[in-house]
Amino acid sequence: MSALLELKNVKKHFPLKSEKILSRDKPMLKAVDGISLSVKSGETLGLVGESGCGKSTAGRVALKLLEPTEGEIWFKGEDITNYKGEQLRKLRKEMQIIFQDPYASLNPRKTIEQTLAEPMKIFGMPKVERIKRIDYLLDVVGLSSYHKRRYPHEFSGGQRQRIGIARALSLEPELVICDEPVSALDVSIQAQVINLMEELQDEFNLTYIFIAHDLSVVHHISDRVAVMYLGKIVEVGESNELYTNPQHPYTQALLSAIPETNIHKEKERVILKGDLPSPANPPAGCKFHTRCPFAEEICRLQEPGLKTVSEGGQMAACHFAKEVMMEKVLT
Ligand code: SF4
Image (cartoon, rainbow, N blue to C red; front, side, top):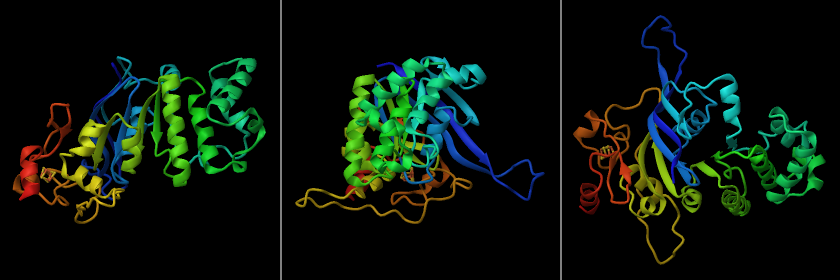
């Protein structure tokens, strides 16, 4: 599989309001602080972390809905970092997003037909084709053409997310960023929507970046998983390997919080100290050191880079990853 999307040392900093307007060092909120990622064609990359870790911002920067502060974005072998105007408009056809809250993302005053037709109209699709495609899209997401004259409030949460998915697929994109697509849905509906997304991925050869804080859902759908903490990727690897052998203490803590379904197995919970520090004033050295149960002096002084920790290509940003970490856990 070749890389469809690549982020190279991407940063997204937002200026904060400050009384020291004349100061050269204006305070910045470092939502994304230098991430590099490669997403292969046809795969699902899960992006996980606590609320406020920068995962949604990273997704929006990848789609060019937000301009990066620094770094490069490559799509299908082309540097799209500085795409604007017509170039960007054409790119929109190939990259789409599914939002967390399907109700808020649908215009309440437009019928489903009008909502689905909108992107096709913008790209000049003739009316006859639009009508056919809307019927087709409603069918593939498990609704029917009978629904197209209705308004968003007439649907359940699960149905509204199916409409959101149909809209994302309307222009036959290659990459879809799924930003917490099931977290607003009842648990019973989540599985249906996830199964639908998997079926559509096979049918249309879609590439997903699946952003979520629910690690069980991410494990189910992802080929690879990247874990974010305070705007950085702290661990990335093949999904099963990362879930069975997490190397970064933050990943270990997140995984230990997943409820154990096997009643005969006991699970040791890793409790993190304190709250997530502010991305406007992140700790020096390893950003995780204020909460890490294994932190040592070097962690406060030196930021660890991502390094390969397994033959399968798993990478972790911790001074004590791999064997040393295992020793620490055992002692
Ligand atoms: Fe913890 Fe140190 Fe590893 Fe950071 S570098 S995760 S503080 S042990």
